[in-house]
Length: 239
Ligand SMILES: C[S@@+](CC[C@H](N)C(=O)[O-])C[C@H]1O[C@@H](n2cnc3c(N)ncnc32)[C@H](O)[C@@H]1O
Image (cartoon, rainbow, N blue to C red):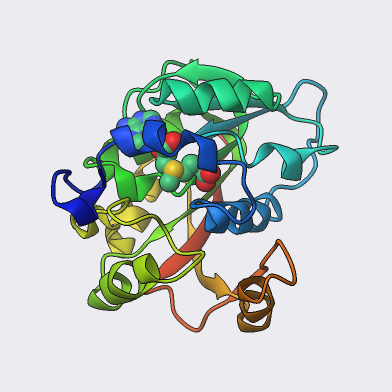
């Protein structure tokens, strides 16, 4: 039973097991994660060397995989949820069970680190960011998307979005874990990554067509503020 039934706390990891049949359904409970994966992958350039590695922190069921096809990366996914990792592996991801605050990978292994919709599920953002920067090689690219710690974000992402088709499942998010943007930028700078943020939102036209059942995908487009949902990217300083 979800948080709506009153027996489960928000951000309970057991939800991912209960909802495992939903991951890959384009109109399922994780529909928006598909739209976000496409937007995230758009920030990832083709690999510049053979054997380049992309580490996908909190990879879930590997929804990023189809959007990386042809870009030339080994896609390594790190997640705690075994059922999600099994699905990710079935979609070509090298699945590694681990916590994003203690990533079981060596320093500097990644040409690209993606951290999509994960920071807002973790209590220690600084630790997760430090790990993302640690596994990134000098000159490598960090790409992330997450939810901002603002009253507007709480209203839009929880009060509103949890009641709308296409929005996150009820109870998936705990607003106490939403991300302080200034602190995120400072954490990344400590790890050698100068981060640039931009707000994103679903395209209203696409969303209307999706709600009417006329398409399966919704484009994410720039939003006027980073105060709700935002993407961020930056390269790690070369040594
Ligand atoms: C909202 S899903 C996002 C999945 C994927 N990044 C995507 O966008 O499709 C959050 C994922 O983070 C994982 N997760 C939560 N806390 C974690 C942690 N501390 N370490 C590793 N994975 C974690 C969950 O198991 C879940 O698969």
